[in-house]
Amino acid sequence: MVDEFRAAFQELIDASVATDPQQFPPAVHKVYLLASQIPASERELALEALTPLLSGDHAAPGIIADLSVVAGALVEMGTDPGPAGIETLHRLRTMGKGAIVFVRAWERTGGGPPPDPDAVTADAEARVAAELGPDAPAATMCWWTIRRHGLAARTMLGEPGVRAHTRRDPSLHAELVAIANQLSDQLTEFDEVRALLRMAEASSALVMDRTSGRAFRVLFDGISDNFQLHTLLADALIGPHGQGLPGDPPDPRWTASFRDGPVDPAAQTVWGWWNLVAHDGAWVWNEGVPAEIPTIDGEHVLVLDEQPYPRSWNAGRRLPHVRGWLQVDSELDTEEAALWWNRVAPAEPAIPDPDAQDHTPLPEPVVLHTPAAEAQRVRGFVPRIEPEDRDQPTGTTPDRHSPDAALTPAAPEGIPGLTGTVAGDDPTGLPATGHGSGSEGTLRSTGPADALPDESAPQSAPWEPPPADQELPPATEQRGSGAPDPSSRQDGHGTPATTHTSTGSAGEGTARSSEKPAPTAPAPTGPGEGTPAPGAPSTSTPTGLPRMPRGVSQSSGWGPAWR
Image 1 (cartoon, rainbow, N blue to C red):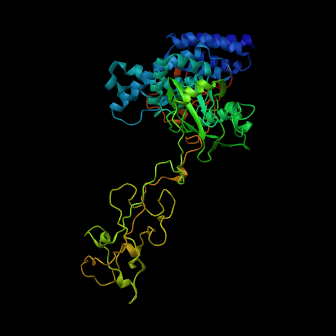
Image 2: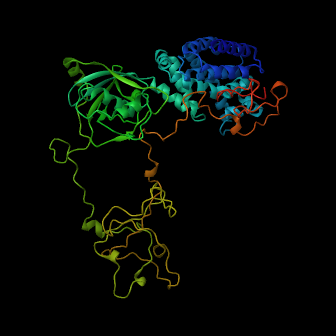
Image 3: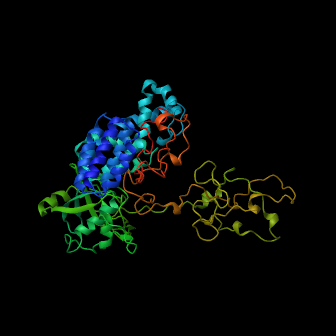
């Protein structure tokens, strides 16, 4: 089996260098089929052989993009990426810059979203040529291949060795972050690339427990958010199996789901232990990432305070294909810990105790209702309201004219959140009532009797302001449409819940152009004529082997159809 794999891989290399449209697809099929049946050491040798092709100009851009995806597929099988992982990031840096040039030129030549990379046509190249001139073909080629490079880089960044390389190369890391930031709006694959790059920015922290006064230096990797950090810290510090801090240790099923295991359906909800606080007293939110924890002298400092209220979140890693771990490197001695505590802000209660004597007193309530102010009336302060005495039986007085009725001004026009909404369109789903008591605090819904006068009634005399000693009827205040929707709250990880379907470039490639509108370019002729569109499911292959991994071009040529 090893010999067969070596022969198939040699065919792949030869077809790549020769840009042979007849031999490349069958060679990829064979390599992908046999790779899972050979030792990992053989796959590592194969990746090492791919590195020169990924780093040089020995093959066409389309072939290099496909080979990057093949390399990612081998890594997903458990192969150490080695130098191929680093070269994949360098290739993304090069092609990403060109793709950004294409996107900017597209925006300056008419606007609108750029075409999907798998659906680029000659018309797209012609459009950006008006801005880029002779550089248009290269920029368009970068855009055409950028998704495949992003998929491959996402798989490589899932490996700790590749992330460690980006920490040692700040320039590469900064450029990749800039590329991911600018391309994530157009291609969702770069959202995860950006998250993996942020993950690489922090791998240690000084953790200080305020209750005991102890301090620990911890090392970690593969931590995608502070929910994961919080849970693994509790596992490492609490109880006799940790560092002996007081509290209940986390359920082993929780910690397993934050390391490398699946989520146990019977243990999906994690209950928190501390309030995470920065050295300056600011809260460190669980929705954030370790790289955002403030530093002192370049070291992330995290203080463990008592929880002001119970917290809970969902078990499981945000990036399921990345293994997470955390361990205590050392505990600071008493003298060193005291020096660090001198540099940390003192504890402050999250919710002030009203019975305490040492906190800042709350201001006394301001009384706005005074007899003198009540006697003054400003013309036009409330809208004209038709007298409603005609609607009342003779000898009766409406309740809202009682001496205890409060004046409620009409909602000013043009203020966000106070404009009227269509019935049933209130995003909060709550009835249009206030929070007061009785009839004084209720915001009445505008009903037909309140909004329109009775047309059958005789016309009233022109409205005149009432005497100063008479209360005006309260105006109706409409509910605004700017209230947040409680149902739109994010999940426990601070991000909209998503379903992770696969783990890398080959297994999670975005569907190819079979899901996109057909290119508008003329049908190709020659060797590529009649071949399926990129990504379209292939029902048969020249060799009878399974189709290539998703993300690899299904075309018989390695250039856009118009080239």
